[in-house]
Image (cartoon, one colour):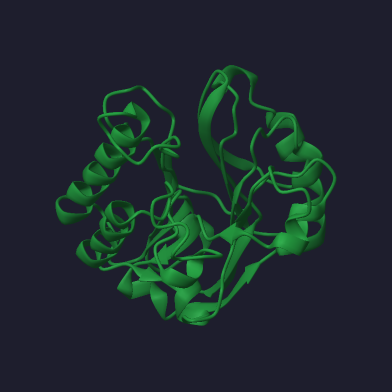
Length: 273
């Protein structure tokens, strides 16, 4: 069966529900993973999401900050939320799809929102950067330890706030000391990919040196003309699932929609039995 999955940092799901509606109407994903929902669980817009045809909804939120959610047309069997760095932040949620979704073997989808890390790439001067590095270290330890991959069938998506490769940013040289592309961050991400056996599907379909961006700053007067983007949003697959990927799409035009998020949707198409 074909499954279409999208990841998108929506930067407030209530503020931008109209954009979610537009995207779902135009692209009709089976599973939509959102980050930075910025809403506590008791105020999550469930009715609006159900009107879009998603009957199966999982979310992990907190007032005013962070937050992740997964909307699915396919029923899921379990929901898991993992805390990192003992901060109580809502930065992870996962679902497990199985027989009820029409799958012969289970599939787990992990949705992450990694801390941005502030502006100064020094943990002594900037606690937010230290938090980010600690978060990445905990992810690495999980992948190296008891991370469940559902019989080798797992997807990891989300705003990971790191552009790991040279051509994931508009200028490698100029951004080497800018948070999201510093060597300590990019090396940490590459190590996580390696220890977890993950496949970076966006780069499988579009290898370097092609430029890939999913985020453009609000500070740019003309984001199209300057095109100073970064690839901060990712879709990774476990080895047992990577071969099922059929396409990856970055909907760059969404950055130009009215009152947009600074991130755009990234969609993967999979043929899974």
